[in-house]
Length: 119
Image (cartoon, rainbow, N blue to C red; front, side, top):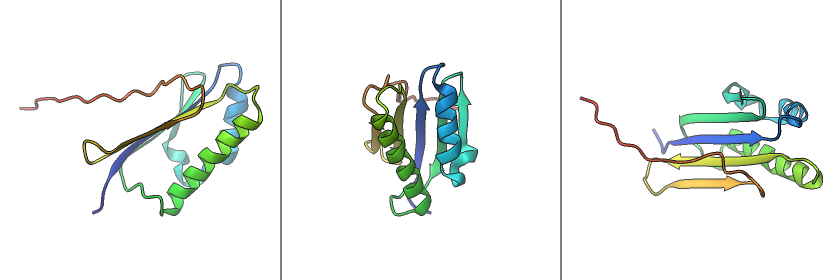
């Protein structure tokens, strides 16, 4: 079965710059994950995967990581752009949480633990 994680990433900008960022993402985002990428409002793309094996050795994970690296290089090379990235991976263990974000991010992803009683 293997170790499983939940993944959420968001790529966002201003409403004015969204069409330009949309072109970049449409052209560069890994094809194997495009079905998990949705537009959120007028300024963001959200990427979500649940209950997946997310190992650095997997080719599709490497493709996602390359995209993020190139996205950040592009935004750093064009300082006038207001593009941001945030990522959270929650593993099966309660202390296995990874979060990364770009410089100047608004921290729009938040993590909360909740317990429900289902009888």
